[in-house]
Structure formats: structure tokens, C-alpha cells
Length: 225
Image (cartoon, rainbow, N blue to C red; front, side, top):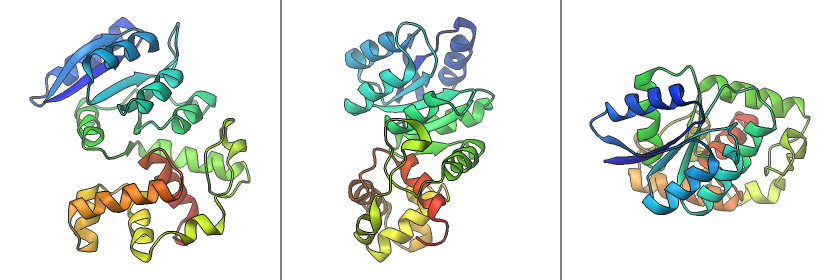
């Protein structure tokens, strides 16, 4: 079973999310949280596979909570209306494993939780396009995520990208297309375990905290990977 904590301050929305997730045969909601403080406390106590996290909540917001949760090794799936403000960029820097829009269909929500539980990234296509556009508009080259939104985007330098092997560059390109480890393995003729290992090495070499960050970089490079 995939064990999930749902963090959302609006009771009606939270109840709907819980109902959708609990209807899946392989997903169990082990706790509900009305703010980031409750989410972190529940995760410390229950060690869930995934925390489904709202961004704007009272007492403690989802970004601060995400930073602590990823530091604990818990995967966080952000649920947002996506205004492309500092909260969303903060979640990206904090290492969130995925971003979903609140108008997501029920089946897609369950599928996203499964993807993140497998250790892969999940980002809504509309979110990806807007993120890329925002970073491109900041006039910055692809690189590490600083502390102040797109304007804080700093280049890793040619040396960092040069660390990638030809195979890792291929894998990075696949990540940018949103392919899962299984799909990468099938395309490149390697095992799924090998694909996962390549992704981990890419994150380490480029000093990234999540697969989503790698996808952003890959799409910014767009063909030069």
C-alpha cells in the first residue's frame, strides 16, 4: 500500500482528496493535516510514502514544510492553483517531487501519487510550460535554484554539465520529456534499475534536489543535452 498524508487547510477540498485517494485499492490515507505544522508532525510519526501538500496554509505554509519533509527523505507532491509566485518557486527549490493543479481529474491524481511513490517526478504539463517561460523570461541560463525565484537562477557552468556522460545526457533528455524510469529504460535499451541509477547520478552531478528540477534544466537546454 502507498501511505499518504493529505495536507490542505480547506476541509471540503481535503475531504474530497481523501475520498479520491482512499478509493484506490493500493493507496491509503494515513493522516490528514490542516497546515504544514500538522503535516510535518504526521510525517515524523507515520513515515508516509507521499505527502500531498497544499501551498498556502495557515500557521506553517507548504513550502517550509516541504523543505523539512524532503530533508527527512519524504516525497512531497505539491497541489496548487499555480499563480507562478514565490511559493511555487520555493517548492521547486525545496525539492518537491511533483506539482499538480487543483483542477486535476481523480484518476490523474491517483496516478501522480503512484508515480511519486515510485521515486519519480510528476509535473503537470501546463506547469512545466509556464515554469520554463518564467525562467526564460528572467534571462538566466539553466542552473541551480537559488533563494529568490527565477531571478536567482544561477548557471552550473559548463564544467558541471561536462561531468555528465553521454548516456547521462540521453537520460536527462528523457527526464525533460517527462518519461518514467520504465519508459527511459525501454527507449534506451537498459534496465529500469540502471535508468534510476543514471537519474540519481545526474541529480548529484548537477547539485539538484529533485527530478522536477532536472526536467526544467533539460527543457531549458532543449536539444543541446
